[in-house]
Image 1 (spheres, rainbow, N blue to C red):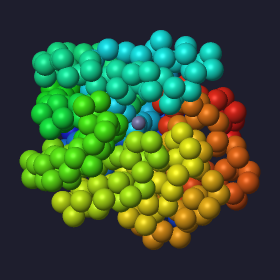
Image 2: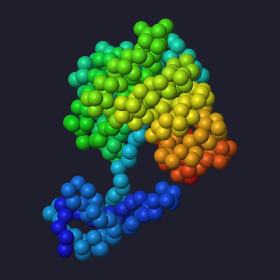
Image 3: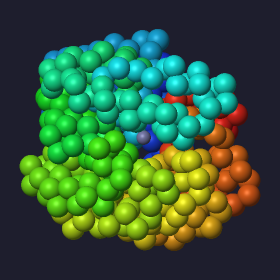
Length: 335
Ligand SMILES: [Zn+2]
């Protein structure tokens, strides 16, 4: 009999990843399942009788009538903000475009004005209930972006908030630096100067202090075009950060190809991705994940799935994820 720290037994269903790593990400479901944990890690999973015959523990949790599943991982969140923008959701539903709203000072620009006024303590307090909500819904890890500060101090403040949240909340946060989320209002006519601050001041500091694991960018012709994107992400990669891109969100613009070229971990949004861009993700040895956010703005997923010959649920381009930020279109979940 092996001694462990914790047994979770009698689960109505125990949900495990498939044993075969090369197969599509299918789930293996064990009826009346159990797991044994040691030092915070699962050391065995199987039928309750089999596990209780082999393992014993001081703490035994009886999960009768419950489902035991791995925690969800949300790979794209912006949890450090101050004040919500649900009124913009209404505007979008009534026909205003994301770009119209941004031009009028809304969108990210609104969030930036709010965040700059808030202290670290206020931002922490504001974020905590959302993190509770994640945990309540089974999400145990989130990627967390800065990007509403857009000054050296406010970007660093946001990343420090994420670091603090990671310490004080049970959820795991994986930080991403998104200093190139928008062009700050005060740099609208001199974008290159801001890019210099991002590449020469912010990125080196973020990397040196270990404040982020990833660097992300909003690649869109009216914000950061493909040249800007390449410049910023190359600087980030040199500094040792892994890469992500918000690409093809408002228009089809080449960001997804850059994600593939630079070996980004993911290309996110892809509302307007075309089949060439999708093809560029194929065959990338490291596997750039394409992450769709259905329903946030448009509904591109069907077009890609049907026309580009790319299977969204475990394709050659790497692991695909369908993230449900914003809202979602139910037909994506029929599969
Ligand atoms: Zn985003």
